[in-house]
Length: 425
Image 1 (cartoon, one colour):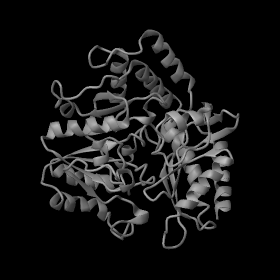
Image 2 (image 1 turned 180 degrees about the horizontal axis):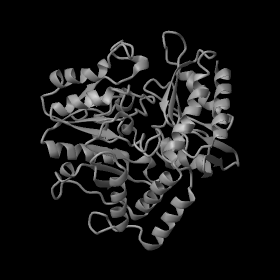
Image 3 (image 1 turned 90 degrees about the vertical axis):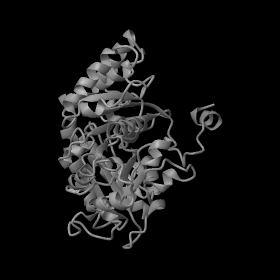
Image 4 (image 1 turned 180 degrees about the vertical axis):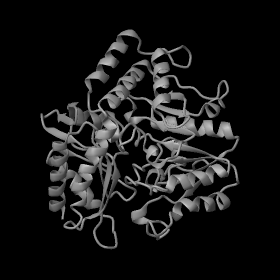
């Protein structure tokens, strides 16, 4: 039996709407190769994970070297040198006063731990999040996810969660237009705190750029105003950088675009270039709120994953991948913006760095073109280009390639996408 047949017989896949029909045999840089020898330009990076490219030699070498020494010891029972070194490096590169890290295995675990820490520090029990947000698939992270499509069928969820309107300018929930709106969605945070909570908000949890919601980029003023309102009420700010972190948006962390320092920052995906690792980092006073027994992880801070993450950070800095993401993102955005005058399917082009979304619509009323988006993705794949598909309405094509993508590969991706749009029309 081939991989597809084995999947059908032995893996739980009924929750997947549809697989891309590719049996992935190997990958290098920005190229994915199927078992049939077909090659694809990867512009999705395994959902924004391999930011330094598939199989970066330095990351692989660091992991191999560590595997020969130690694979597992439990970072929270014994002293793990690689975890200590990585925590120090994260403190050096994280914004503001963030200094102490806790390591987990995934982004959802990082968010869960950050929420627990915020509640422990503030002695409060409520949370404020955003509509259209996505923070993971555990009960806790789904409770703070503002996406019905992800939550349906699995409630009831945790109580004590309020939702503020997403800063989604293309489909403003307040029916206003930026900049004339005065960023009313940020000011609405005061209304949420006053009328949707019991006055016990521990933290505001938000993605600086919303990934699964459809690559939603808030206005420049949004976070300063919204976070100020929450802090004046006594709450903390938790930045969910699981998808937007590690150079993806043209800065090491996306929140750096907004001039706001989080109290806790969560990361995963791009942290170790494909090795499973998550973390949250906090100010020392916040971090020290945990007491013995409050939190732990058996596999969190795995020595091999930490070694890979250390090498990945060095690669990012020495190869200036954040700057490359900004440059290549601007190049791709120019291509995509150029499609709007001639292609009615293109409703909105938005993004920052190499975290870019193209929202497809059927008409001037912005009717979501979800079926057309699926067709565009299929046509791209058949032409050798892998893109993502997402958004709360299922109509956003996502471009999130490895940050090592070349100018020539950007041009090729744009050309293939333009042809797919034309064919889908």
